Length: 99
Ligand SMILES: [Zn+2]
Image (cartoon, rainbow, N blue to C red; front, side, top):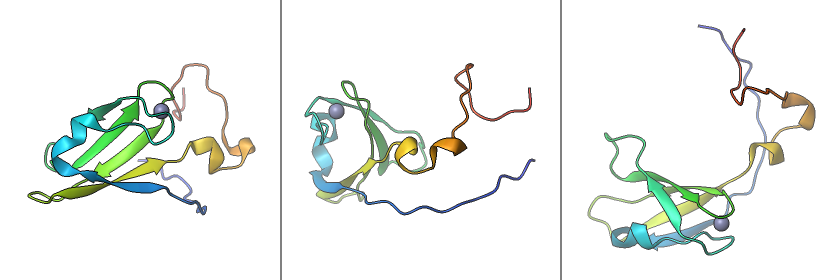
């Protein structure tokens, strides 16, 4: 396994509380469009990713099992977190690799 250099950055995250039973009704905090809800880890049924169908913003949504409310956090774009010179264009659309 190749080891990558880990760096740090600071960011402000915007969040809102959501009703746990109404995740399918969630709207984008930026453009109010409907969100596509994904559950990437079946072992964690309280955690979701939500992606805006209009502006493409990603959100992480976390609820508590049996809880009434959860929290939705807007995930920042990578380009807003790291210097431009660290993002090397890759025409295949995939990152990394030693091809
Ligand atoms: Zn949006």
